Structures are given as C-alpha cells and as structure tokens.
Length: 203
Image (cartoon, rainbow, N blue to C red; front, side):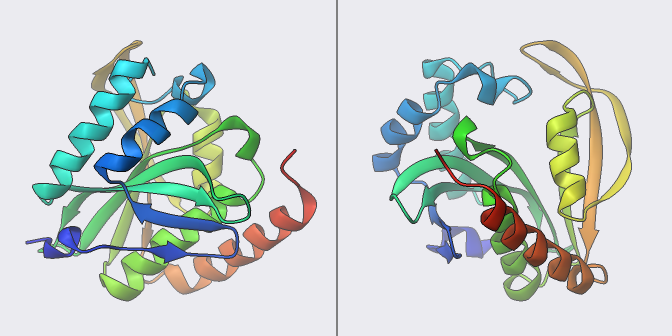
C-alpha cells in the first residue's frame, strides 16, 4: 500500500524544483523557516525545535508510507524557499491530500505556489491516478483559503472543533479537486502561474 512513497520523486517546473526531504536537508530547511509569519496558521508554532522535530517526523512518516515531504527550491537561485507534503494517501480509494505547504515570505503571491501545486497535482492525477486531491486550511486562514480557491479547488465545508493546535481549538475548511474537474482546473492553473511570474519579481 502506497509503495510509491518509497520512490525518489523529483518534480521540476519553470521556476521551482521539488525534491524529497532528506536528513541532510533538515538543517537547511530549519534555517530558512524561522520567520514567525510562516507559522501563524500551521500545526506548529514555528520554534526551531518544533520545525526540526516536525521534519524528522515527516521522514519517519515517509518510511511508514503515510506522508511524503518535499523541499521546494528556487531554480534561478538554487535557494530553499519552502516545503510541502503529500499526506493521508489511500491507495484503495485513489485519494490523497496536499498540505503542510509553506514558502518564505519573499515568495508569497508571486506564482511559486501555483507552479508548485501544478506539479503536485499533475503527479497525483497523471501518475498516481487519483480521483480526488484534498486540501485543508484553518477556517480563519483567509490567505491560505484564497490561495487554495485560486488554484481551482472546490469548497466542501467547515469541520468544527476538529483539531487543537498551539493557538487553541480550530475549525478547518475542506477543499478538493476531482479527476473530472482536473483538465479544466489545470488549464486555469497553468495560466495563473504564468501571469504571476510575468507580473511579479523576487526582490
């Protein structure tokens, strides 16, 4: 079950490169991810020890075939700019989720998230043959929810008091893209990423 999680998956776009997180990457990721703005609505509060522990846990989860963490690299600078994961994969149901996605603030709103999601979704629908890809965001995280909606995911509803995080109890907004929706969604996402890359530059 989920044997693909033990494979070395590299996803490459115009501006971003997604590589499997390794032990050697952990400290590099920690050092670029200490800006507290990154962690406001994430499952952890973003202390150095928490980030390191979370990354180590993600490596363990990959060995257990329950998650697949990626490091996100800016191809133009070879700089580590974020991380993302596949999680909650169910091969018997052909479903998977994309989550734990974050970028360092200079890369927010400039097309990198859109291209990252395009690469991940292409892999899900073309290689894994999934029929549904899910996304979850804190109800109050309007930035993340807008980003999810912009890539074409459909809102499914709110799960109330579903988790307890560092900031207390949370409601979570649930989104998804289905196999039937993907061709049209893909076209829109490709266009959106290109438009953002043309309009905005990293300073």
